[in-house]
Amino acid sequence: QVQLVESGGGLVQAGGSLRLSCAATGRAFSGYSMAWFRLAPGKERTFVAGISRSGGNTYYADSVKGRFTISRDNAKNTVYLQMASLNPEDTAVYYCAADDASVLKTMPRLYGYWGQGTQVTVSS
Image (cartoon, rainbow, N blue to C red; front, side, top):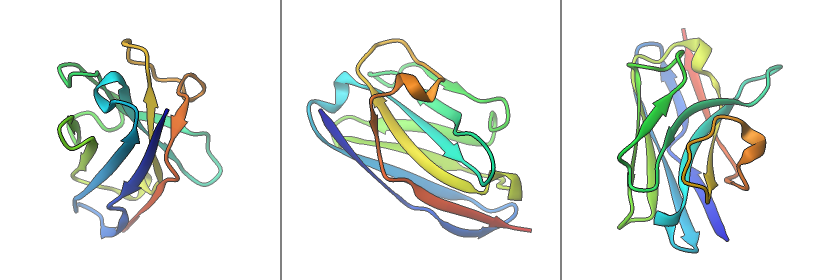
């Protein structure tokens, strides 16, 4: 099993940037594909970005492509989400998730491990 703890959320003005981190403990981090999801008020949890076990493959939701970058440091057991050009529509609780399969997935129900989430609020 793996335990996940997110950090780095906060309040930022539109156009600003934030970097989220997700620290993992437990079973070997490099054995998990990782992803970021977000949950906005009144909406379903949606996929934001995913990264393969080695970090060699990444995948993004169309809404964040070109603005967000997912990366990982397997030596530090951490996955990151660098967010730029933020807008109010990015306001949500952001969750990291882990899956022990090698294929990147975008459906939340396919991920077995979740962090507690970190709030990102973008003001206009």
